Image (cartoon, rainbow, N blue to C red):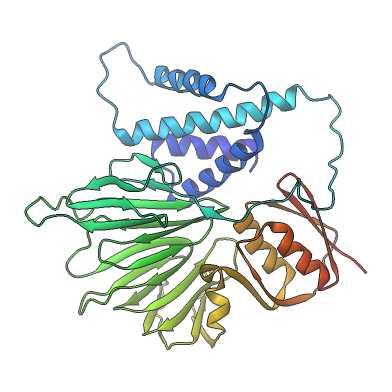
Length: 389
């Protein structure tokens, strides 16, 4: 992300005009800066954070007594301050570096420069705009929303549960959002009992209590759903240019913006894929089938697929089956929170194999190298990919 894009996105976030997609970009960008500067010597991050936050607060003060700012604005200013500090820190160390930038040196991967896999890491945004880092909060009670209690289990899962019936239900339209950055993942049990496994760099938005006639959520990225059965109350997942409608079933949706297609894979039950286009189009899926839809296309393609491969990420491993290297590397990029650098044109090689996604990145890269035709080197969180003869 270049500087102009960053500041434009930050302005939209502070003003409350950023879309979910843009908030996800900012979260991923912040995560990258956070990792690159966390070990820099001599940087007093708490002090800088306090100074920057007070500066932002002063910028919105007026000579008239100001009303109390909404919690959502305070939350935006706080995260904006942290992001700006991360950016300022990176610029500070760049300024103090040698005037002539040295060429980046990529090396063989080893124990010292290895990279950990994705772990339980996410941000929960409540209906009032307050943000909670789920990897920092303790197990047990997290928050309450109307008649709903939010808790964190020992397994690191967020669970929404209804409290006593005598209490006020609160607004059905109150929305919560859970976002995972690159290198993060999280599980959540929704207010109706449906379970969702959220993959890296993904966002799920949902109400704190579902309406009586439908259950609707929105997804950016990838998630596996086990929908609680409720007769005559359909469960709908809105994603990139489509709606998936079910009553109770198990399915996976891959809807990343950097993928050519949104892929919906059905494992159990049945779902209806509804395309958001001027031309009405809908298709029913059977178990073992996968739909492919495109933001630009009016059609829904249905094909038989390897369901094990589609949900391998959720079950703890990668599965490659005649998979092009660029497709594999996009998955690795999200899971390990790395930046890819391609050295020259890649050979059109395809790879097949299994490997745990709970290992450090060296395990995956060495397996690919042993398959032949590809070489990897690393520098920090950058991975260089090069075809070899």
